[in-house]
Image (cartoon, rainbow, N blue to C red; front, side, top):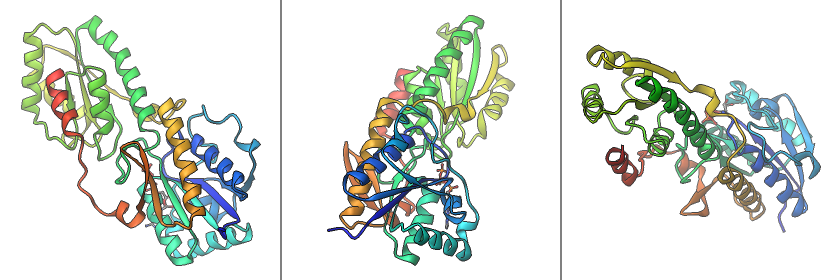
Length: 326
Ligand code: ATP
């Protein structure tokens, strides 16, 4: 029999589509197994401010299709301090909370790992970030939806690029990872993809574009990951324009629209699976672990291991294919 009587769930760091499906799964799974559930608003900030509310089956009705997070999210400096953590712990005790499910990125995991170590409170983390840059899960919550959003936007830009014979540089999110750029680039037939994992010299990009022009391509799309070492879409466009000036060039930064929107079926199911697995793991006595999806199976990874610097790699076949099919 588990000693856990009340589980709290919160979202922290950047929001990502699919977080609501995960919150719903945590609440309903915990209730199913006889626990009470609380929702902490605005992540660690809400823990410190005692912004904590009771959750029922009904409080998570009709949220699966919503983007963002109904619990709100925040970045909280105070939680990094011993005083902030103490306040957070006192409020958890005040509310009778004895275990946590944290949905967020690596900063959230670092906070959870430290907090759980100091106060011996069980915690299971769920990877929620559109960047897909966390070790221990093939996919993070929100990545699939964000990639679909980017593809939809590129399709629309392609229409106007084609009509005006234009060269478009489209910057996509992903921080230091090129996951969104690579998949969206392949799926939208982009002429070139610039990403941090694969150095592309401007001279090589120009060669690719020249080959396209020689084949009478009337429009070209270049995807630039925000972490690309050439310094973003504006810089790449400027450098290309210096030598390749017969094209009418345009730059589009997709920005935060990539974070929003109704989650895809993949992210809804992933949110459900991860939330369900997180509660079951807590009730089995697991702690300081991250729930992940590996080869379509839910697996747990120690937070310490998840937070260790691993060389981040993109799929080799996708990288090879991206060049050949472009
Ligand atoms: P995203 O990947 O979307 O940025 P994230 O979870 O990495 O999500 P961060 O802002 O890095 O987002 O971290 C979320 C919160 O976790 C921070 O605002 C802070 O409250 C907490 N946190 C991060 N690092 C630490 C730390 N070293 N100690 C305590 N708390 C931390």
